[in-house]
Length: 238
Image 1 (tube, rainbow, N blue to C red):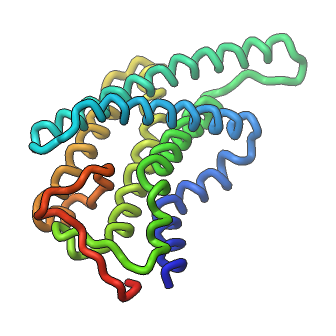
Image 2 (cartoon, rainbow, N blue to C red):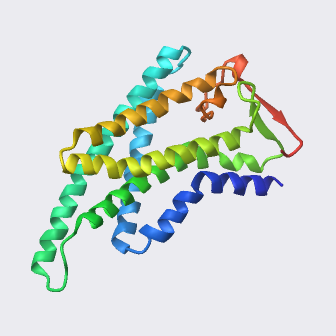
Image 3 (tube, one colour):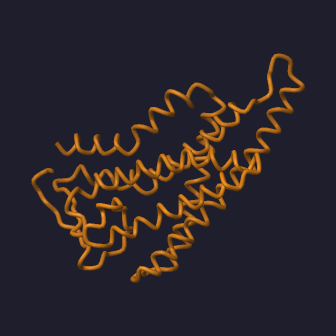
């Protein structure tokens, strides 16, 4: 029963992304290599972000928690722009190679979108591994974890739903941001950090009683939660 729940939560969080990778991205070896490189870059970036935010602990007030989220979003959006700079250099290099090789065509708009989609998928995958899949194996234990602030669903299911939402956000935000920067469309690339920041701040609603009805609870690091938010365990396998 525990394994079935573990597998179900894993597929809820990453199933749509896995399907996207297998159907669209895995068909081109260049994009697969790009995904692996970008995923490593994002993992390093998220690790550096966590180290920076570690210095702000303990985050005992809503204001300090919101400030930490804002800093995290700013740092990640800076990494996103760095990815765009590397993306443009990659496009120029590939087009330069195509000019000197017979039978090789230049990249068109669809090819560039696929490259951006691959980088967005890498961001989502790194985010999932860092914030969800690293602690999901706890589901294989003898109990299920619930938060007093969100008694409606288990901690693992809530995390899966939240991860799914952020996966979709990060995957397609990269395409939108790259398009905005490439074509100098401010409304496109500005929508990305705004949506990212809004989604991050909405997770603060989970600190309120029944706040998960509006925002699914997220993992809360390894710091102990306040007494009113501490988790309860049930051993009935649900």
